[in-house]
Image 1 (spheres, helix red, strand yellow):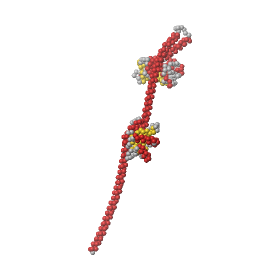
Image 2 (image 1 turned 90 degrees about the vertical axis):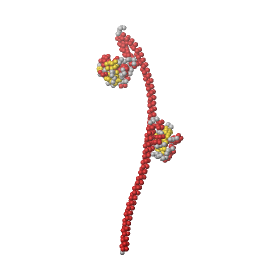
Image 3 (image 1 turned 30 degrees about the vertical axis):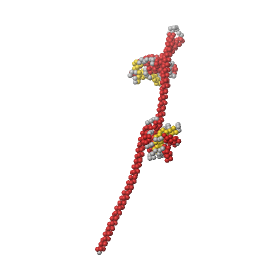
Image 4 (image 1 turned 180 degrees about the vertical axis):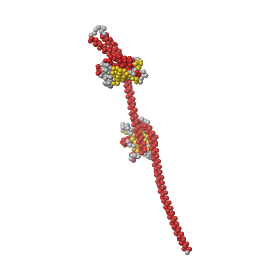
Length: 495
């Protein structure tokens, strides 16, 4: 019985142990399952980290590449800036390409360079720049370019930059062979006027690749070359025009100097001639006038009335001729500086009063009112009294002649700096605009009805002008037909 119980107990213990083992196994399986899940998660995380690492590496490589390209571009831009400054500092067309040196090319990222300009006269491309090419290479390239000139003329016409990354493989291989490079950029040089051409930049190393940034740099450089050539051409044209103008000015100045000397010589001869003739005329005129006066007194016997009238005309015209001769003599003396001015402080009101007395008969005959407006601060002048009196006599006499009955003449003055300006205003017929400059010339008379009726020599205003200029003054006139005239002149005054 004990043995049976013992077996039952052992069986029960085995069953319990089996249950426990099952439970333990279940727990272990759950733990394993959890571990597997954790392993899968870890593996997934590791895979993700691997992908991120790869992405970081790729991004880093791209960033490094971008940084390198950016550094290259910045370096190229700085080099281009220096090169542009060097090109723009010359205004000689022959010196523009000489400013491009090998050092600039290296900084931009190129090794070789050529520049050609098309000659319309020779109908071929002419070399203007060569860097890192041998003479025999240049000869071969120049021959090839001119043999296939239409290709390069088309490039210039299209105004488009080409490079080894933008042309077909066939064209790339062909150009690489011609220019002895592995990659290149060709950009047109396009001044607004003058000879156009192209700039070639190449790289021999197969490890160095051309980028779009390189295209942009060379395009900018070619544009600046075109602008520099245009500036040089414009400067040269301006310089030549200036030289031609200077030569013409010199020639014209020389001609004018000779003409002025000739005018002075003729004027001197004229003055001498007028003076000589005037002196010669005075003697016979004096005799004629003297004899006519004696005959008119009838001291040599009574005369018929008709003869008296004729003698009176002779006497009157003799007076006119004497006045003409005297005016001519005075003008010639003033021109030659032979008349010495006696400058003294004088009172304008007194001078005009004396002139008014001399012309009182003419003023009364035409019932003309003569008014004065001479303020105290513009009354004292530093002049030759007799000569300025002649100025007023001539100007006021003219005003009387051309002013209608019951008209008005006004003489006024005012201070202008260290001078006194005198204005003689009348209410006469006025002077045509085209005649206002000419009236001061010798023997000039305005063509109007009054001058046709009243005779004159045309010397009065010429004499006036010379007298005013001898006082270092100036004279001018303002007038309008039907509204009168204003003669103005300046005289030296006390400061």
